[in-house]
Image (cartoon, rainbow, N blue to C red; front, top):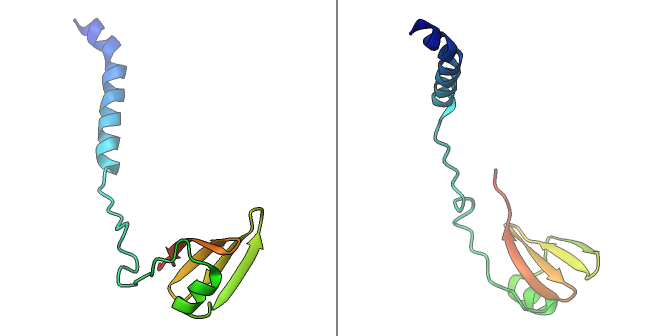
Amino acid sequence: MFSSLRKQLPALAGAACLALSAATFAETLEVPVGAQGSDTYVERVRGLKKHEVTARLGEPLNIMGPVGEPAITRWEYADFYVYFERDVALHTVKKHRG
């Protein structure tokens, strides 16, 4: 009886260590995915031309690009960016607030 227990002892000890280490490091991490800048309204401009975006939102603070082919340009506003492919708005992205 003791010889079979002696053979199983390393496996049992390993299983116990794994169980204890998993319990030690298990913790709940909550990431508020949509919570950043939720009070910021970003107008939908997808499909609009650059002059139409300017008419709605005003002049951007900064313009980056164009880069690549097709030409991608990023316009920076106070709380978000607008990405263009050539002259057409593709996406509006809120700025990260850390």
